[in-house]
Image (cartoon, rainbow, N blue to C red; front, top):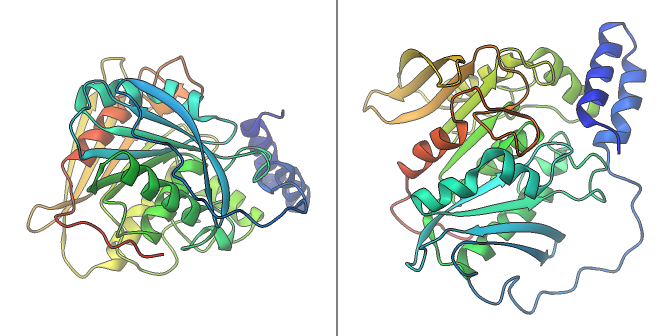
Length: 343
């Protein structure tokens, strides 16, 4: 299988040299789904994807079927999790990755044991996208339909079966998965309490492959579109990212500023990770001190999960621990009442 990041880099070079159509052709085999095959309508599910909540300390694979189709996933249940109402964190991998690879690279299952939460890893299929990229650039996958609807349906079913706390459900992702996480959280605010985006693109008016490439290359694709109030968001981006331009991180602040009339108070701090990476963290809060956006810039890091493990792909072990910081951000937030299960 082709390396998705090499394909993206080659397409970006073609755009810079004035060959946008050649760039679109290169991206088509990666981002576009394979030709549709005739298939029967999905069968109505008559039983849950799992017979019961998995045993503590297990990492199991399942297949979820809904009106939108099927989706493979992995689910981690933490050790010592006999109590009910655990938080649930949904993790969306990047292009070319799998659920197992993403779990290994982020080490999120280890944190699940430490803090006590469930981790759900939906997995993109090659049938939906040859490069296993989430289709965040397609209009039908940017609202309450398509992939966001499938991910939301899977999340709800797992939450019910595993007795997850309905007011403590979160979503995060990297690269294409980060863009998809931002879209899904915005489309289903009654379900997801907060979102984490690593090396991704903010919601915008992107509807084509060339538009997606332009946003990734120059950082001008996010921060546009309808001014819907975003959920609390934590963002990580390496300032040496050659795949998704670091300027895309500013799109999240752009959404926030356009969606509210409340004044924002910003606090900037600097630090260095144990691995030697310098970073800048900007916290944006309302006057009542409610934090609505954290923006982490990892200096010297590329297109990689900061603080991740070498056991997975596209990680930067030298950076601050993005997984731990996301969990800190998530677990500090909960919805006081159960969400309405809107379609």
